[in-house]
Length: 115
Length: 109
Image 1 (tube, one colour):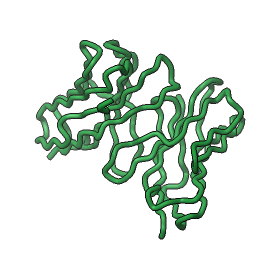
Image 2 (spheres, chains in turn red, cyan; image 1 turned 30 degrees about the vertical axis):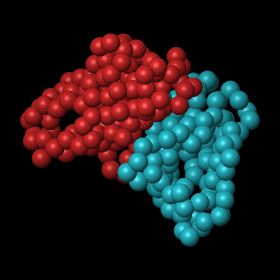
Image 3 (cartoon, chains in turn purple, green; image 1 turned 90 degrees about the vertical axis):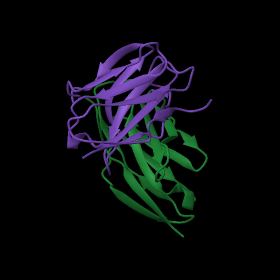
């Protein structure tokens, strides 16, 4: 169990640029989640996958955000045309579950700063 | 939609004392899971304790226990014999997806 890995740890980009983040879950975990966390707030759900299928996407997620998990292993989160309001910590988590009873294992997050 | 409310942005406790963090939630579901997660400064979020809604018995994990009141939709976390390492942000979560805003716990030596 090597834990959930996220890359990069930090990303600074200029407004209008596209960014992509990667998450490698714990290898046997079938569920993978993306959250956004701003300072002093709890994680805000963005989307989740069960294997390669994206089963739910937050209505708060604009069309500029897209996530993939093509082979049911690692996942990428892309933000197009970044805005300053996108600045946040982006957390990935995984779990081994077909229901909600399994706890989440979180990565260290990717901190995005949009200038 | 489910909502999770943590009404205490900050709490403070003396080392070795007991503290209770509050959480309320709103749902129309009858079967669900509730979690408390801990996020130390600049470190990963980790699970503290989990409660299954269909179980009436409150969950306990060493110094951590919950008071689960299903009818009142309340799920508080009690930390006994507080230690300096307990200082962190604590988040209440409903199933996998809904988190409260968190409570920052400070432990005074």
